[in-house]
Image (tube, rainbow, N blue to C red; front, side, top):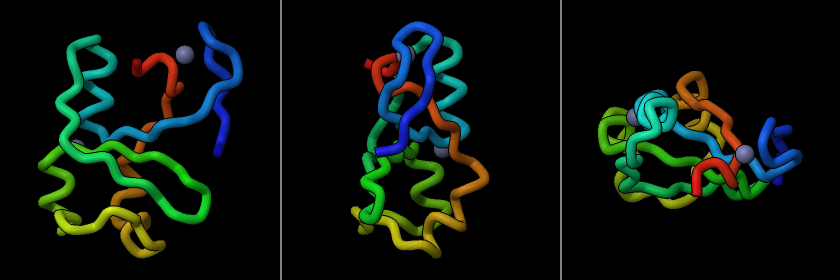
Length: 85
Ligand SMILES: [Zn+2]
Ligand SMILES: [Zn+2]
């Protein structure tokens, strides 16, 4: 798992959020997470909102392949896994 150096928690596992969920995270509102999608190779965890899932036709995909990641890659924000909990 990739690591991130968090101000509060030190080295922690990374979770990637889409732009929309990241905005909610910054506002400290409850995240509207409806989809949890894992990349298979690195085990990277990616949370996407419904809008992003719809936009990229990922409804039935649990594990992203490289092409899927390319589609959403620019919109992903890495954050500390512990900050999210
Ligand atoms: Zn989104
Ligand atoms: Zn943290």
